[in-house]
Image: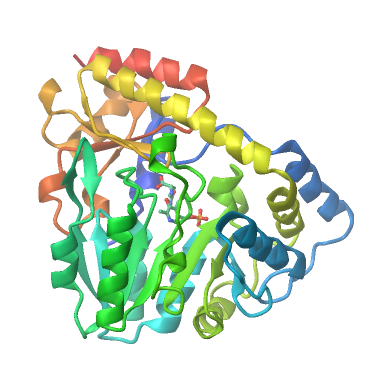
Length: 385
Ligand code: PMP
Ligand code: GLN
């Protein structure tokens, strides 16, 4: 393996899922739902295959899906998006992130990440030869928040790109208006591109927080922001690997330039199915969010009952738990032991950080699972005491 990739090894998600399988554990580690998306969408993918949509799609994605993405952005956020130049269909958000970084970051350019960060960001920055700098989230209320002065200090004229993820995996943090304003301030001041990972855009809980606001809708960010999202989280199809990147034509073209040599194109029959879902399954999205909010509350209560401290989670389908009250101060060790000892898998924080220090005790649990699975997980976790 080349030096650039050596620090990364197998992803923590694959490792923990393998342990879960080996010990027949309840898998609350890797984030994937255990129920399917809208039935009409699944039928549409089957129909697409039966109808012969089995050859290469256009490089930028099928026109119908690009149009549906643009229309969804208008309906939801009042954003105007040209489906022919400002939307790129990608092989999941992962390829959108990779395309954006490989297409826009020169060797030696600095890229600023908010820590903890989704693991693919750091790996693809390494592949691009970029230099990463991190700004840790800080405790805010019962959860975490953006460190405004930390961000101001980390971003400089050497920064090419800032990668932001809200709602945030793994902490469940949702950035607020003040956070967005600081991002716009520093990006404008230092002429920085923003890559905004909004794959959990639909999973924001507690009406008080209000709906998701895309970063590109903030004054000063529209011209410098690429937004990624994915059918994986929106419609419970992590295995379809169908996502999209939206933003100014010039930036989308750069992501496309890299994308065409990463995968060339994504899977064809999924695209009309996701198009249909974007156009007709808004109710499903609402119901899914409401169900996930209930699951979040169930798992938070169960973890507290089992003896964990639990951080507030405003979005995504993950929450962070603190096992120190149970006598464990190393989340990675606990995660490697739990599948065998109590039959539950979770994910530690180290792979999401450069400086695990403030995070090393924490454990991430996914709650995108059927109620009976969560209940069995809760029952088993009570055995940790
Ligand atoms: N970004 C974040 C924050 C994620 O949690 C994930 C994984 N689910 C991805 C990107 C990757 O999304 P996809 O599966 O669509 O590639
Ligand atoms: N995004 C999901 C998670 O954070 C799955 C990631 C993966 O398996 N690469 O758990």
